[in-house]
Length: 168
View (cartoon, rainbow, N blue to C red):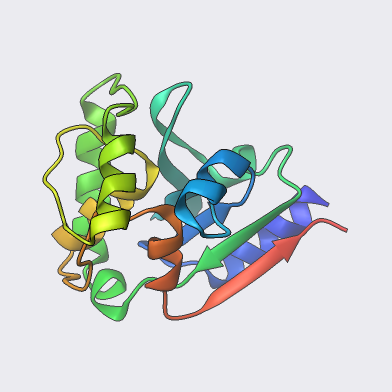
């Protein structure tokens, strides 16, 4: 079944689009959004990858097929046109992150994300979590509509279309 989900996603995905999960109840309660994790989709040749920040590893760059192992359902969001149009910027930024070596998860950024959600103020931050990573990449590609530090739900809400995929 995972193979079918992989095929469905690869048939619609473009570099800059996002993939999201709703697995972490703690994040969902604190943010008020369904999504608790988000990563960015990147095509390299004929292979689709997920670039993300995860708590246990920090920056993670993996084939979509590997990423989907154990995933029962996920959401794919179409990036705003300016992000998809500037796909080379997205690719170059992901390559930059990948070439830096081990980059730790920004645990200290999490309270900043939540505080920004409460106040609506966009605070600067140094370390990344999943949503701030996608926000940073999208902003580098020219997207200007974020008014606060984004949580996973904000990223999904900024998408042009949203498709949910579920293993049967």
